[in-house]
Image (tube, rainbow, N blue to C red; front, side):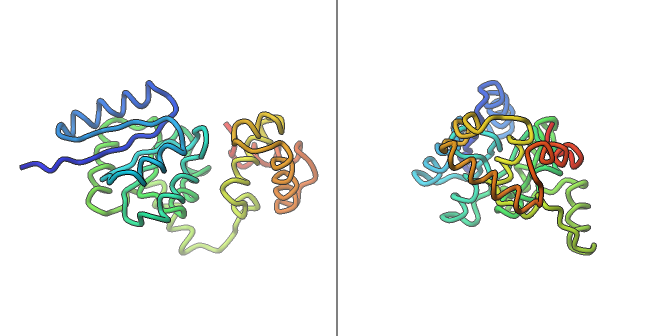
Length: 213
């Protein structure tokens, strides 16, 4: 008898959630699939029930995918969590893997790659794309050359990207559910860590390092 698996999908776009659900339901006909649209809801759902697989977007209200992943890992070290996002690998892949992700996929992938990744992580293994494998190899065997933004915390990195895009402190606060004063504190810390003087320098840095779209 085929085992019933439970899959949790987290994305703040309904069309994406529905598309993922259709693909996964076709591949796993007996699966029980639930969807949420908020980063906090992922963590709550994981704590309330047992799951076999979580697929999460990065940019969501409440908590980012990485913040939710970090919370999940405090309670479940082995639960497979795939990060699925529109952001390119050079922006978030290493951060996601350090936070405990089982794999990192682009939303531009085809359904075959999604199924390959889910099968692999359900077996308790990681799914690493060839390009990401090369980056990991360079990190392990190459000289250590951390760029300034790589020393930012995950929340600082989120704030940095928004500042570089010209988003106001008030809007960033709304997006991340924090006060503008807190955002200002982050800004000061970010500029200090990156040895930059102002938002203009931050924007130029982000563009030069392909950190903003």
